[in-house]
Image (tube, rainbow, N blue to C red; front, side, top):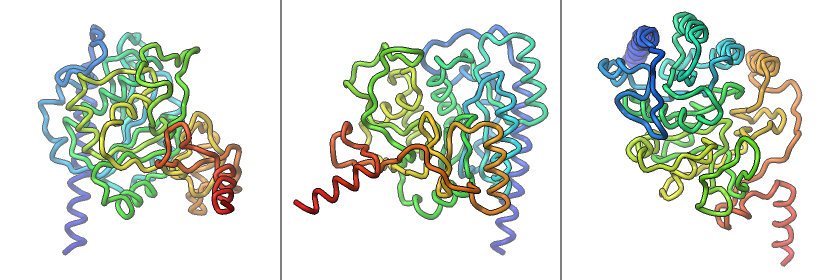
Length: 343
C-alpha cells in the first residue's frame, strides 16, 4: 500500500511537472520586448516574464521537496547544456526535486530571445525575469526568483547555485531529510564573517554603510534556505537593501533573525574551488570538462574524485567569537586549540 502511494505521488508530480513545463513554455512564448525596468524591488504581479502563470494554480498543487535555482546568462548555453548532461540527471530518482535556470531578459535582442525560446521549448527549464542580463542584477535575479517561487510553489527548501557549480542532488536531499529536518529555519552553506567591503572593481559596493565588514553570509556558489526564510524575504521585499553581491545581500536580509546558520565545509562554494574532495556536496567554479569528469567518476564509483586534491584550506566557522575572528584555516585553528590546552 505504501509503495502504491509512493508511486501515485511520483506520477502526480511527474504529470504536474509536465504540465508545468507546458505552462512555462506557453508563457515564455508570450515574452514581450517592451518590458520596462522595474527598479530595485519586485512586484508580485508583473516582475517575472511568466506573468500569466499567476492565473494557473497547478504549481501550488504539487509538493516539491527541493527547488534548485541556477543563476545563468542568456549566452551561457554551454553551461546549461553541461548541467543537463551531468548533475541535472541526478534528480531522476527524486520526482519532487526540480531545477530552473534563471536568466535576465530585459533588453535582449530579438535573436537572443528567439534562441532562448527554442531552448525553452526543448528543455522546459528556463525562467526569465524582467531584469537586465548583467552581473549588476544578480541580487535582483535572486530576489525576484525567491518572490515568484515562494508565491507560486509548494516546497520545503530552495537551493541557489551558479551555472558553474556542480551539485550532488542525492546528497543534498539525503542531508535535508535525515540530518537537518529538525531545523525549521535553516540557512545552510559555507559562511564568511570577516570579508572586507569591496572598494574597487566591478563588485565595488557604494551602498554599504552597516558595518566595516560584510555581515556573516553563506558564499554564493551554493546555499540552501528553508521555505520559512524565503517567505520572510518575500514578505519584506520592499524593505530590503539591494547590494551588488547577492550572497552578501541574502546574509544581510537574514542577519537579525533567530535561525539556524549551518556552516558546512562540504560546500566548496567560494570564489575559487578548494580542489576535489569526496566529501563535497557542492563544488563551484567548474568548467565543462571538470563537470563531465566529476559526473563520470560519480556514476562509476559513487565518489566525486578519481584522486582527491587540495588547493586551498577550509575552515570551521566559530560562532562564539566576533565575525572578524570567525574563520581561521584548519591548521591555525589546530594550533590555537593546542595553545589553549597548554594554558
